[in-house]
Image (cartoon, rainbow, N blue to C red; front, side, top):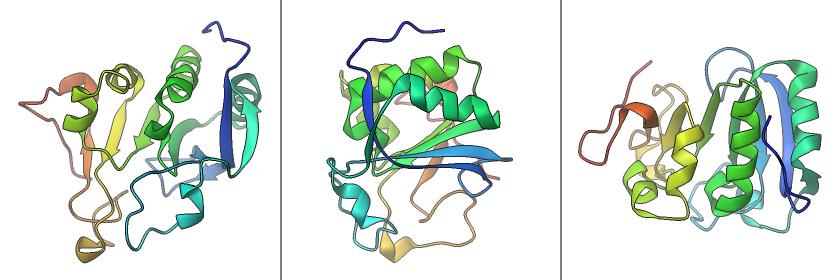
Length: 167
């Protein structure tokens, strides 16, 4: 397991165990506070506020995940809004053997180019990238709200050759 710092606290809006809408199978979805994208038509605009939610330690979050024993999806808000906190959480989740999906309004290419966010990609199994675009809203693209969003496998991708997949 990852060693955690005393200040490893994350603002959590909610944790929902046993959901099947944020990735394959039953998963524990962790909704994190804070998002700077403010996408028109966002399904959860209350998640934009970085001060919303409840402060939880990474140990508390891990205990909830272990209780249900599902793989994990991070959503929000945008988990990439607080990259240092999210990195600690991702390390802990992967250290406990969890498959991790992450939803973000950033594109894979933007994350690769950002030194503060690039390290997070090493701990993500599938990245659902891109802002929600109301004009491209879709109910047929699995695990995505709009057609512009992609399912990216960071471990098999580079900026020049993004590996996406369809369900």
